[in-house]
Length: 107
Image (cartoon, rainbow, N blue to C red):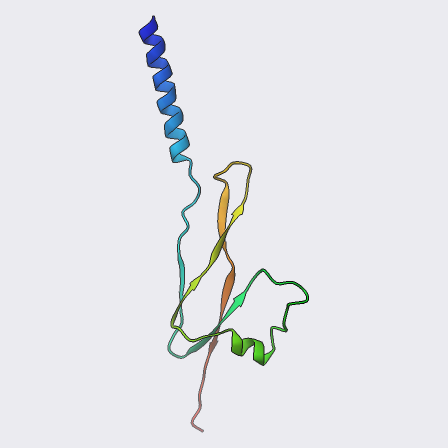
């Protein structure tokens, strides 16, 4: 009787351990964006701005400051809780990349 009780408690501990170890949150997949040779890109922040610190998006000075010189850009992400459990979360980007294709004419 004692061995059955030990076996059942060990089996229960193994099942609980397996559930706890496998119920992890989503993997943080790195987000890389490529910029084509004929494109100009601007890295625009999506958060952490206050009303006093905001600038006009259509401002030429603002866009010149946010222009990206690289051809591959890493988009930062933050973890946002989506439920009550510790593993209920998702990653959302903190920046967005806006593309502008440059066209030249020889006429």
